[in-house]
Image (cartoon, rainbow, N blue to C red; front, side):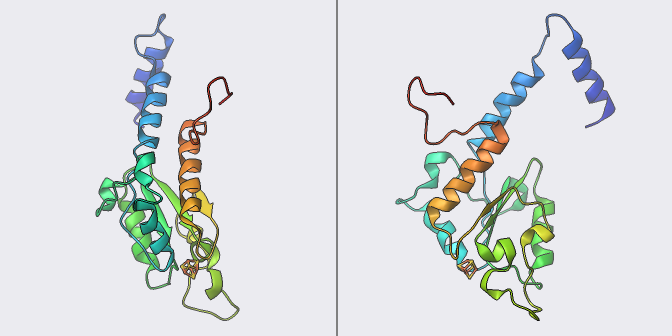
Length: 177
Ligand code: SF4
């Protein structure tokens, strides 16, 4: 953030009463963003089939606002690394991440993306042993493959990280959030 922006925010915050509650606006933006995450259309191996399944009627990721899979990283704020990251593919993954606008989030879906999975063994030379060696990961969803419900749980965790509270399942009336 530029210094003049910081000065402006400080000036606004020190007024009494404040003209604009920046914190409140940020909170509203965070909630709106978390309920409309746009994932990248991007799959590397078998785990991508599970990712496709969450878009179908049975799991229906649209219920949580994240069904708009975008073909361009410039329109995405969620990268789901679904599958084995080969060393050949690694520079492309980093480039796609760098082309995403901030704030951006990364989910490592499946054992391959987390640690190399079944392809990790001594002497192997073709697989990156965890996508977090290349890009920052916000949530890890284990399994080989993870169930689509696992992906949804990862999505809820990212929403929780963005907003500071869990949204799903919705709390019953009178229940603490
Ligand atoms: S974790 Fe298992 S299912 Fe997923 S990409 Fe690796 S081998 Fe395939």
